Length: 480
Image 1 (cartoon, rainbow, N blue to C red):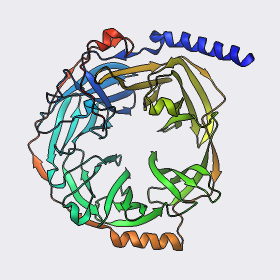
Image 2 (image 1 turned 180 degrees about the vertical axis):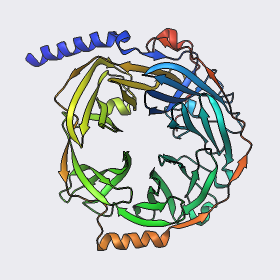
Image 3 (image 1 turned 90 degrees about the horizontal axis):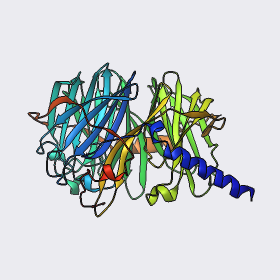
Image 4 (image 1 turned 60 degrees about the vertical axis):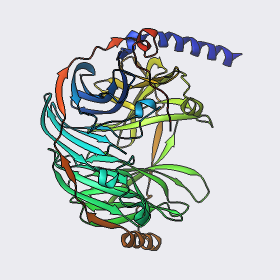
């Protein structure tokens, strides 16, 4: 009886919070089907990159919008036009994007670099440097010779170079899938362009860059998949070191990169010798020297159906983890049960303060930035009715209550996933002997990109309100 009463009260409160749309300041973009591709922060400014289409024909001009928010409030939009011969995508017909079409890198106040990638049959890459709404430099490259495809990564070294990786196939029967890496200066000029490959099918799953080194997670598909982190020189000419992983129990199953100020952060999972799954985080110097590790213990009430969707945001004053608790059923079957976002601050991986935002929302997104006490959330809501529409929204969550329960506890550990021994030395040599780096030629075209500053007509509404849905183009659904 007591549980039933508590459940009723919780649902009642959730309903009250859910109705308070003004408190959440939800804004939606009518008239366009739109995909939010990236968000980035510089001081008090948030940039949001999206693709948008104003009719139900995706062969027509696709709009590239870079929305600017100051103190989490919408300010203006830079509208970028690139004709279809240099950019196109069919992903407005799908549930979500398979490509990093847009990636934004703030480099100074009111100045950023934007990369625009068109994969598969279009195979073009455009690099733009924009300041105060004006294009300072623009470069477009044709990647058709390597048949560039969807496994892409981008990284900024924080100084003078942006790196772009993709996989493709030059002559498939010779070496299957291969990788290419391009180093650009901040004006989009190519500093180096290399093909990194083996005779097997290869893929780069992640990349991070520092002024002197570039790290990639390289996957080699043999009879058994083999995984390594490669440390490359900043000019991409040399493999300096190889760190194998996933070679048995007690080794990482996967590796993800983060950057904590000037440290290399590895987030990874292992299966220990007792068969238990464990999550860890380790920090290294930019040179790859081990510094510290932590075992990540979840403190949320979890069972076989619940999952915590947390995203770390590294700032100078600490680590901010924002997220929400949902169910696997909601994720895999696109259910829309409301959730409450939360936020926790850590300093040196020690919990300092935590909050739960009072607004209960069914609009869930991984595009979240904590700024000036507020949580900025942006995304695309998929509405399906004999097709698919993507409705762009953003909301600013302010009202929150304190909580003493953080999502994670970080327990100090001496585990070094890059520890060298006889096994890793042999694996490292195997990779070094297998991997080849070759300088590659790039084709440059005259860039046709144009830009101007506009104001989009955001309205206060919920993404699934009829007054919004009725204005959004609907495209045929063709999920792969």
